[in-house]
Image (cartoon, rainbow, N blue to C red; front, top):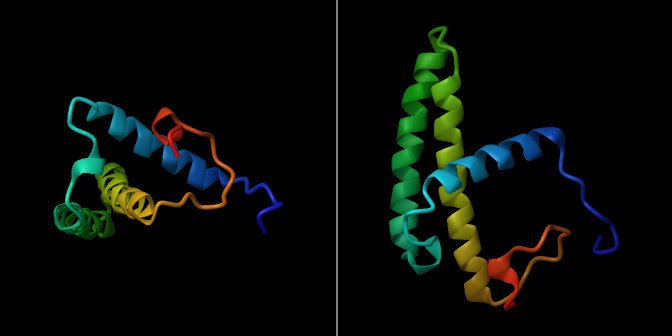
Amino acid sequence: MSDNIIIPRREVWLFAIEMEKKLLQNDYKSHWSGSDFRYLFNRMNEEISELSDTVDFINDNGKGYQTMLEAVDVANFSMMIWDNARHRRNSVPSIACPSSESDSSE
């Protein structure tokens, strides 16, 4: 598997772009690497609750835009938890991905 290059599905790329847009909007905040796991988990649960509310609305013929935004928020908090756990484990997954400035020290 490590010899294969993984090319994400179109949907994954599109979703990742939306995640990055939201992260860029919040760049003025401190980086999540200093955040406690429980804090991130609780924030993710708050976003899950907001997502749940929008799903109820979309089931009643809503347009779905707010559902998309809330899904991105949930995903970003999940990614933050994953990223902090990855750093705590002190390893980098063996997947092909573009490097970033924050990973250059690893």
